[in-house]
Image (cartoon, rainbow over all chains, first blue to last red; front, side, top):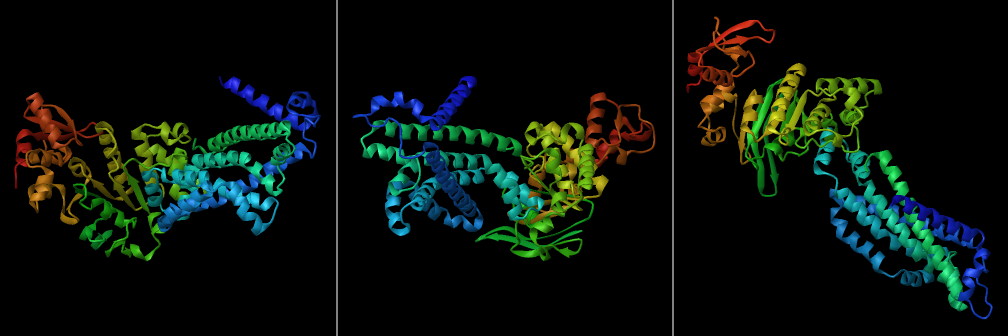
Length: 246
Length: 311
């Protein structure tokens, strides 16, 4: 069955690229979802540019969540930072359970409209998977291996960088992948506060009662999330094979 | 060589090691035995300061171990543990090269040292250097673990139940290898074990610990013939101590001039094995043979019986 899966991936990728490149070709497909001669294809901006801006926001937020979550995960798994584990876990959980829409509502009065409140919301929402996976990965290092690293005379820093992080890498990368994929979907809400992204298409559809727009925005976002998941999984396999920790 | 002076370790109200003093001669093997919870591993780990002593000090070649950062001290002391603790994401060669790399050796020197050690441990470098630990058998993993501990030519090697995870046949082989390597390099070995037979087989001296205290520290034969404490005799076992005593002497050491008509035994065989051979064959004396095949004399049944007697 792996061949079928590969074919599906290629088909999904081709569909996404074709739609972004020549959306008007798909007009007959979306026409039945419009009323009173409304445009069947989003025409208030460039779809490829919106998709790029959308991805850019997601990656920027994921990079920030990764740095903070991995750093925090390392800190609370050191003997000196262990007492901060419950507090950090609570904070990160709040980031996940506090609805991103509410984060936007709180952030806009503080930082204004645009990209920034969206980045804050996505950053908070993406912390949990990376943080929990970093902790699991670091805690799963075999005690005998850590004892050997200490016994060989590695400094704590050498042990972390050359033994613990490489061994925790599979789980950390998996956490980053989850965080990225969740946020591709979540980022659509950024358009309510004037961030550039595919949410614009959906919101335009909602405002003008145009189901075709809503479908297009949802479809492009969904395809991007799916393909990003697959691309990240492939990248992970490469990295792990190179590091021999798969 | 290693001076341990009134060393203690306390965790809160619990005293794990209680004022242990002992002097370990350079180039010898010392086995520390005791039941679990006797503090033997903690004592070992205080020598390389994986555990910091609460009181007392350790001198290695006259130098107080507390005067240097712990991780720098540990680079000069070999350390091998049960379950080997090999780095699973590194090849056999990289694992062995760990400490030389930490010490900043030149790449060429590391390469030749790794190849030398693989040879010593009967692991063909061409075949094994690039393998990963999970591709090796348990016995091979254990050998790589010891090779890694010896990589930077340490004067002292600490071993915590190094053979605990091996099956009996491989364990015997590993013990013989350790003996050979220790003689070859003149390394001072301190080994923790709960296996009395292993302690007797390897130890030039055996230290018996219970409840954090050192009960007796002496040559194996003295533990059998002059136990300092009832616990020592319980640990060594009283029912077969005559046989244990015989196992401490080799045929080569006990040989007397003359020719034996009975079975031929190697000079390295223990008197216990010679006795078994004599009982089996019904002969009264065995001929002892040196490794090169030349005769080394004979061992008579009467001589063996005399050595197995108390006192």
